[in-house]
Structures are given as structure tokens and as C-alpha cells.
Length: 231
Image (tube, rainbow, N blue to C red):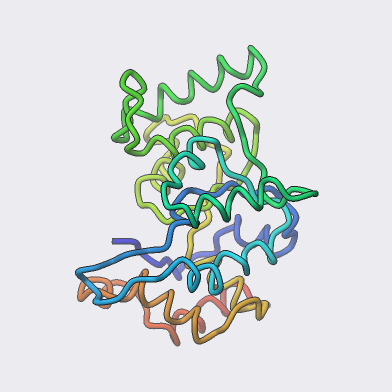
């Protein structure tokens, strides 16, 4: 279950509110429409998800990026086509990070960070399985490059960052940004339909009985986020 933290400011969100031109690296789950069946009878078509979520975040942020391992996760043709279009347009709207671009020194550092991260995930570099590969490769790359922000809707990815000291992941300087925080950013800046953003929030964070016990409903969520950020 993904939790919504409304008790403390996320300094990463505050920073991108102040300067939206900073590089934000995205996990695959920001591109792939959520499907929470059987908890819900419904899921999002890619076209609807693109309208509510993807096009608005590309309107909101000028420097979005993904790692090549995340791009490889886009098996649905519509998702892959969308990402490819953003990568190939001039000027590019989506940076594609590739490990081959790293220097020899950077590659050695990247390998050492990955070695700290992957045992805490389902990814095994010896067999190069797909489970958690995108997030491991993304985090190792951006930590090597000194990039700050990783946006994800994944508990394990968030914990790898937030517990970097306790788990010694080497991600001390990386900051996480979660989907509910970007939903609020789009809401605050009128970049997407507020009705549709409400639907997306409820689908991702307020669907199951446990989520309704742990997380705030839409009205309270907006009110509390306003208190934290809309000053």
C-alpha cells in the first residue's frame, strides 16, 4: 500500500515548486497506466491516462528523464511510442540516460552503488532479470551523476532513498518525489482536470479498505497539501 504523508513538507517537492526546470528522473510506473483490478472494476486506458497525467507532467516540467532500463520496460506499444516521441523530438522533451555514456570512473562508481542497492530488491545482475531492474539502474545512474530527484510510485524505490543511511544504499543525496505530490502540483497549477486528478488520486491511494483507513480522502488531502505548500 502506498501511503500519503501529509505531516511534513517534502523539500524535494518544495524545490521543484520553486524551480520546475530541474532534472527529474522518472520510474516506469509514471508512464504505465495503473491497473488495480480486482480491487476496482475499472482501469485506465492509455489515452485517458495520457490526457490526465502524462501530457500535463510534460507541460509542467522541462527536464524529465528516464534510464534506458526503464524504457525497456515499456512493452505496451502505446507507452513505448509515447516515450519514443518525447525522446526523439527536437529539442528533446525526455532525456534518455544510458550507462554507456558514463566515463570509466563513473562506471566504477555506478557499479559500486548498484552493488549496494540490488540485494535489497528483486533484481539480480547475474541473471539480469526484469524485476526492479529499472529502479535499480535508474537510482545507481542518478546517484553517480549527482542528480537529485527520482519520481516513483513504488514503495521499495522510495524506501531505498528514504532509508539510505540505515540501509547504506549510497543514495544519500537522492530525493524522492511521489505521485500524489505531482498530482497536487498539477492541481495547484491548473495543468489538468481537477475532477480527473481526483479520480486518479482515489484510484492510487484511496481504493481499498486499508487505504481509506490510512490515507486522507481527496478534500482533506488537498487542504493539508495547501497548508504545507501553497503559501
